[in-house]
Every structure is written in C-alpha cells, then in structure tokens.
Image (cartoon, rainbow, N blue to C red; front, side):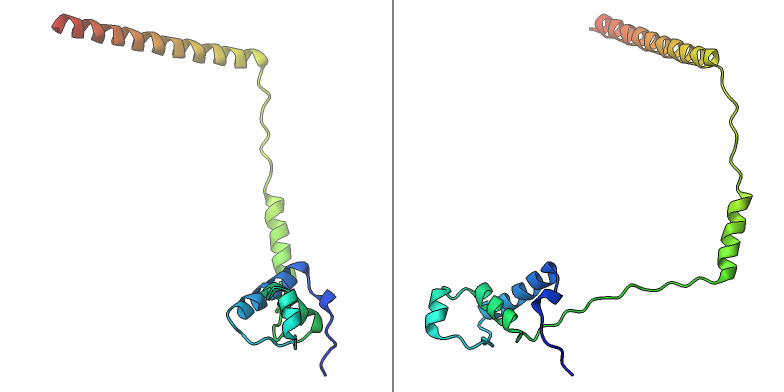
Length: 136
C-alpha cells in the first residue's frame, strides 16, 4: 500500500537536496515527468529548479530519502558494575597548602636567575664585539 505524498514530511534540507538533484537531471536533458505546455515553460524561462518544484509538489519524483536510524547500544549489568568499581578506587590527591611567602621567594629567585643569565649573555656579546673590532 502506497502512502499519499506529503511535501511537509521532508525537512528543508531534504527538500533542497531533492530539488537540486532533480534540477540537475532536468538541466542535463532528462525527460520532464510533469506535463507542462510550451507556454508555461516559456513563462518559467525554462528554469529547471521551478520545473523540479512543480514535479515535487505533484509528488511524481522517483527520488527517495533514506534516514538512518540511531544505533542502539546495550550494556550488560556486569560491565556497568565494573565501571562503578573502577571509579570508586580512584581517589583524589590532596595538595598541601602553600604559604604565600614561599611563592614570593620562588618568584624572586627565578627573576634573579633570569637577570643573571641576561647579564652573562650581554657580557659574552660585548666580548665577542670587542674581539671582532680588534681583529679588523
């Protein structure tokens, strides 16, 4: 038993895909499935999209839409219990609070080391410049 065609059963994306595919077929000289006289064709300027729309609304297009169904995933009760047991064994690690003064000291030490490294690199660059000037 064939169901009655209803254009509203398609989403706007499916309708666009159907009309685009049929318009492409019509533009490639496929036969028009809907009886249209020459006068109506000239009024539509032989537009394949408009012709495809007429065929779509008439419900005579031999194009179908396949909608994939979601896959059903089943889990056994044992697998769920194992997952729960694994989650129970994981315990969060407690971090000890750090004093504010210790953080400031670490930052100050890092800044001092960086300043020393910059001074050393500047000194080595200055020495290289002096060597190249003496050689010239």
